[in-house]
Image 1 (cartoon, one colour):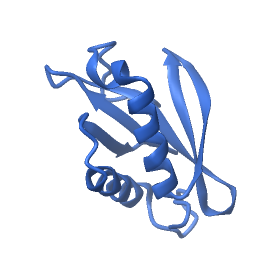
Image 2 (cartoon, helix red, strand yellow; image 1 turned 30 degrees about the horizontal axis):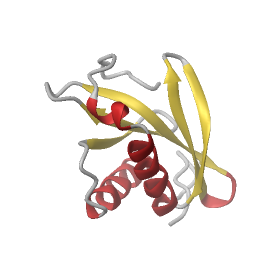
Image 3 (cartoon, helix red, strand yellow; image 1 turned 135 degrees about the horizontal axis):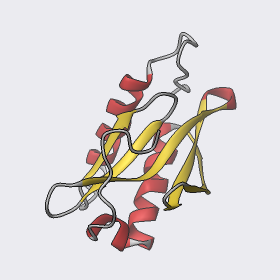
Image 4 (spheres, helix red, strand yellow; image 1 turned 30 degrees about the vertical axis):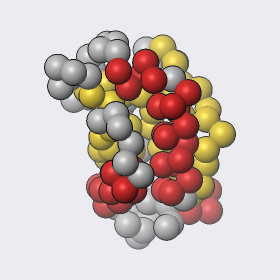
Length: 118
């Protein structure tokens, strides 16, 4: 799948968010994970038991029709994740993140509002 840059003529970010969400569901990830299009990236969110969502990562369009995955380490601090490439590659990165750090998927953490990750 190609990168989805706003204005590039490729598939819009909204369609990329839907595609990545579908891939994650097909992988049967146990934690509730949601993907939404933001201004210039895809926001990856988990949901706690009360239904509050928080951003745990983002997929940023990169060169050559791929994406880079970055993880929210602390509010305002992002860290590169080795997962880069297609949406399928990113889905495996998200899966790895949730298995390596289950607290990101299960703990309430900081509830983030609708502008989270922007």
